[in-house]
Length: 321
Ligand SMILES: [Zn+2]
Image (cartoon, rainbow, N blue to C red; front, side):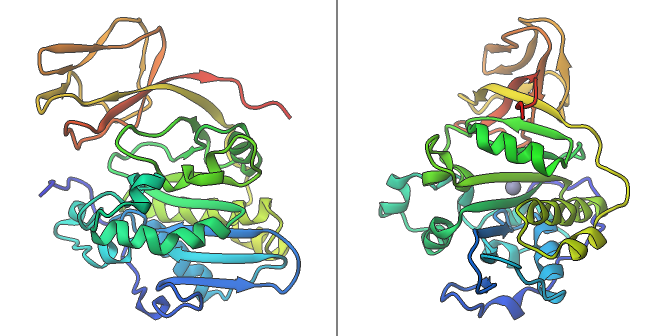
């Protein structure tokens, strides 16, 4: 059990009315405008304890959102993990047996490993393959500013810029532990036009986290011009979003031993001024920053060998228009 120190300000909605859907895959619903246009996919609860995305999809489905062109698919990813959510022990429902967001390599998907999570990924695979644009909604353990994980491609950084929210945009290449859904297949192909972004909306159970999730989703749909413009505008705050900052991740610190310990209780976005500063010890080995003004990106509290302990990056220019 991972102790929880943060208040649970949101309530996990009942998603069982959405089990049936209309795609042949449980908890996946496709809304078809009947008109030409892109297939847009919004995914919630890739991690079962990240309930903000469920709140957003529940809102969209209750509000009877309809695409004005193309198709809009709304998917509750790891619904089995989500249904294990326990407010008294909220960190343990991230997954059933393994992280569904580290299994999107062809070898894993085509292999014979059999857990509830990878079985669900295999169910979702054709849904992900149909999508031209994908937003994957997440939240975080630490109460830091929300951020977009734009991944490795230039077009994803451009999409994050065009959505304009939230303010911090991270470009990265994922984790050694396994491929993320947002990097599956054509989404990571530099020659494809399929584009995915992932949003981390804030602390898992903060009320603001659900607002960020819904605002990001509405801006994503608005930017793709697949929903009614007046409807979108009515969902959004009147004031424009804060200016964006772009961070390029250059490397991940992958944990080697079971004795990994940070020297400070980092939460993320700390800027370490001097190259060579010790930020952690992995067993006897010091972990040092590789350059000046190094930004710590999403340090984890799950310090197990093979995982990324933290990503290291630096501020960079936004993609030019
Ligand atoms: Zn997550």
